[in-house]
Structures are given as structure tokens and as C-alpha cells.
Image (cartoon, rainbow, N blue to C red):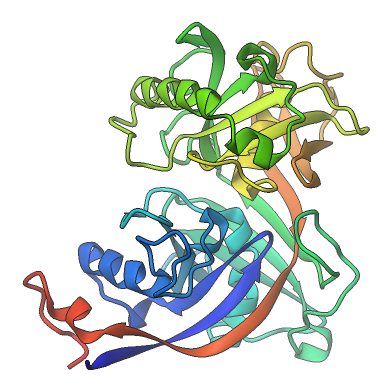
Length: 369
């Protein structure tokens, strides 16, 4: 069987992992691109045994990079979430953890040349239009992964990747509050439907009979909770103007509770059909914004910061994540930017192989022949 070789870099970005490609090395047509990525990951099997996925939603993510034609940006970042067991690919969302590796990957690919001891890269998230500035450690003009920064959910210490997110309010739906309300009641549960970096349906853990401090494994085992949550999420997606979301990973779902470990608030995040083992970077921005917004379901769960910028510490299933929020409350809550620190590391590079028929079946021409 003839196979097609595709150059790639395999990277950990934050608490996620996956292949990073040049967009020009992949099919233009999204239907064919989906088939290629399904083959790359090995989607359709719980272990992704016939691909390079890791059998979890945080290890079946794909980044595709290209030089940007946007006057502001240096690099375009196109994201794909590939399902583990279903042969599905969602191009709607973006991923902030995988974005942590975009700057280093862009340098590794030769799309960006390091400048001085610190290199600033302006990234446009193609899926949502968000603008992100990444600051990388490049001592002596050389990319370095060595450092003392540690993030919850990833072992070891690495060089910091500083991310500043701008233009993330309403990035998917066009509105901070897509339903027009600070609170909605869906299925008998109060929720706040919010779109900041990622559209998320947010509720209080106690309203599901939970503490909000359960482990990811405990939550994943609670099938009654997942059934109730999914019913609410699907109805909320329609109210948010997102249509039928039964097969889409967006909107995500989040639970809030009072902090126990000295953080600002406790949070659990869902992807949405299983529990995130840590916390998504995009989801963290939305949950932090909800925590800061008077009148949201976060009311009564925290001592709300009043001055900007505020460091919102989210206690998640594996530790904490800090979101530095620059905001205004002059005419209701408004987020100006959100800053986070992540790490990334190159794990491997070379070629990943897919059957040639993936490129030419279904009536598509074989662009690589």
C-alpha cells in the first residue's frame, strides 16, 4: 500500500499534545483534510492504535501553521480537534494549550527567526479570529526549552511561554453573553452562557449535587451527571445561536465552586464528553471572566476582585492556573486582555504517514501525485 509522507513536529503545548504541520503540506479542502487528520491520529479506536493520537481528547489535537497575510499577525494558527473514538474532526474551536507550542513550532519550521534573548510572535487564531502575542525565551537568538517554569498537569520544568490574548470576547458567537442574559434556567439549572475565547455553559457544581472538587476520574464515572449536563449543553447551544451542537465540541461546559486551596474559585471543565484533566487555556479565560462578572452564576462563590488587572487563580482537577485579567466594569464587565504563562516542548519530528487513498478517494484529486 502506497503511503503519503507528511512532515510534522510533535510537541507538547501546555497540557495538551499533538502534531504541528505546515498548512501548505495538507489538503486545502476541509473534508479531505478531516480524513487525513483522522488517519494521522488514528481516530475511531479508543487507543488510536493506528495513528499517533494518545487515546484522550488532550492528545488528539492538531495545529496547522502558515505565514499570515494579516497585517497584524506573523503566523496563522489553524486548529483541529480530532475525536478519539468517533471519526470526527471539529474545526470550530481553538485551543490555547496547543497554541502554547505555536511560537516554538513556528521557529522550528523556519516561519519565524528569533530576535535577541526574547522573541515576540504575533499569532492569529484562524478558527476564531483571536489575536495572541507569544513571548518566547531565545537566549542569544536560539530557541530554548530549558527553564524553571512548572505548570499543573505537566511534569518537569521548562522555559516560560507568555501568552497575551486580545479580541477574545464573542470570538465564536459575536457576543459576550450570547443569550443576552447573565443567567438562564435550562433543565431546571441556572447557567451563565458566556463567550470569551471559548463559548462555555457555566453552572454551579452544587446544582448538580456535586462539590466542585471531585477528581476528573470521579466526574467521568458519574454518567447521570454527564447525561444531565449534555442535555443542558445542547439546549444552551441553540439558545447561544450555535445551532445543533450534538456533534460539536462547542460550547464547552464548566462548573464553579468556592475555592478550598487559597485560589480565587474552583472550576471543573469538560471537553465536553469527558472531564478535562487540568484546564484549557481558552476555557480558563471564560471561567475567569465569569468569576469577575457581577450577576453571573459565580455570585457568592468568591470574594470578587474589584481592581484591574486582577490575577484570577482557578483551582482545577490537577492544581491551579492563573489568569491575569485586564478588565473594566464601567458599563458592565468588559475584558480587555488575558495573560497566561504556559510551557511547551518539542518531542519529535519527521514524517507521519497516511494511506495514499485518503488523498484520492471520495472523488478528490490526488494533489500529491
